Image 1 (tube, protein in one colour):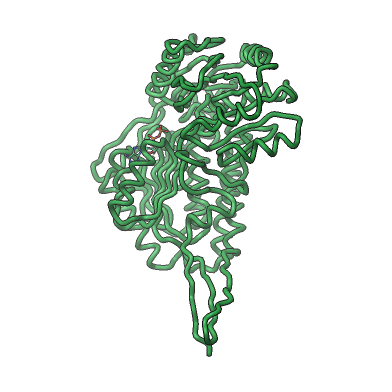
Image 2: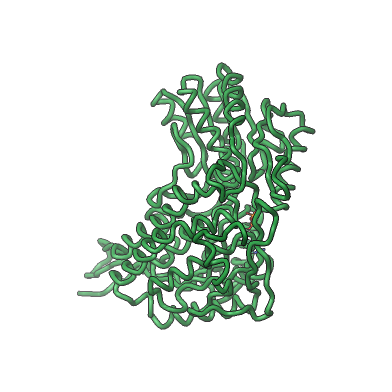
Amino acid sequence: MAVAEGLEVARFLREQPKKLFIGGEWVESASGKTFDTIDPSTGEVLARVAEGGAEDIDRAVAAARKAHESGIWRDLPPAERAKALWRAGDLIEERANEFAQLESLDNGMPINDALVFKVPLAAATFRYYAGWVTKLDGGTQSLSLPGKFLSYTLRQPVGVVGQIIPWNEPLLMASWKVAPALACGNTVVLKPSEETPLTALLLAEILQEAEIPAGVINVVPGFGETAGARLAAHPHVDKIAFTGSTEVGKLIAKTAAETNLKRVSLELGGKSPNIVFADADLARAVSGAFMGIFLNSGQICSAGSRLYVQEKVYEQTVDELTRSIENLQLGPGIDSMTQMGPLVSQTQMDRVLGYISIGNKEGARLVTGGKRASGHGAGFFVEPTVFADVEGKMRIAREEIFGPVLAAIPFSDEEDLIAKANDTMYGLAAGVWTSDVKRAHRVAHALQAGTVYVNCYHMFDPAAPWGGFKQSGWGRELGPYALDLYTEIKNVIVDIA
Ligand code: ADP
């Protein structure tokens, strides 16, 4: 708390109840249990939060079900629902400093990233979906049946939606989930990650202030194996939206199938190729490779963690990238000079260091980094790390590390590149750096990835669909595609003869 004195976030840390938000009220957990959320830059306790368990999830689902059945939200005139969501976007923006500081303290991300990029994007997501509320239209069909029929479709809310989000982008993931679900008239039970529950609680405050009725949005912090698992299994949850590891995503799909066959959308892991052709603007490609892997300390599912470089410029690219890392400022996210913060937890740091040791054992060439960063006390800092001459079969080229660890791999030509880049179980994102426009499109078409960036990386916009091929998930969030995740299509056929 000492570090937060004098900051806007001090009010939240001191006064906000940090309880469960159920049915429009802040309540204790049924068990009375709490858990600590840690500031990863110091390893110290940041806040103590009520720990939701299965019973609390049941209460939250009951509140969401009641709100749904009452029609208090889904039957509101669309313009009214739109107004509330737009207001939520405004309130996020008005309290951007508080959100950014909280996110930075809880997750470790640099405050500037939070303030300039993440928080505005969360606000923009609410506004984008506010725009869709008045446009949830269906269509009419020209039937060839004998007689005369009027056939039309309606988009109706799915019902009660359970949403489980990870710790890497807590506010952004909450807004990508909650905004489209509410826009479509659903009611929501959101379970933030046990590592980073705080901004979801602040979001609950804001949604209440935006006059979203009680029970329409419920937020239950808690652990995955208890609260998360109950939400996935709950017979009165109609849909579950999950972002996290592929392993847990599979568990959720299985649970959904074994219970009430609730709808499932999944945004899972990645091992995204960032590809540099010899004809690229190398300076831009190097900074794109740098940002692709080190943004949020590599804790982004679309991190460009496999850097493919055409042989002719391979050594030069690796050298320039290594040089640019020398000036990278590591530190607590809350320090405005920081460019890269800590990893979110001791567990995540140990996992990343474990992968670095695997890379060394597998015989990859460690170019820079490779250790826990010194001089940061008990904080969970890992040096920005680059391995070169990585081979496709190595685990550091195949498994998601979720940390600041890059695997650089040379390739000869386009055919070689496509085979290598697609040789993965994942398919979330990819980057292509080239000055040849035909090549850019050819490669973009051939890559098995939900998003392909050309001469850019990590560009996010509420209008741009997000999700993965292969084991990176099911469905697409954002853009109009998310409306399909949160509505049921109903066909009505009327005999008018
Ligand atoms: P990460 O590797 O990013 O921590 P996880 O998939 O473990 O990803 O966690 C993402 C979210 O899933 C978190 O909110 C976590 O609490 C939740 N979670 C973890 N295990 C389960 C589970 N068995 N059932 C439901 N949710 C879970």
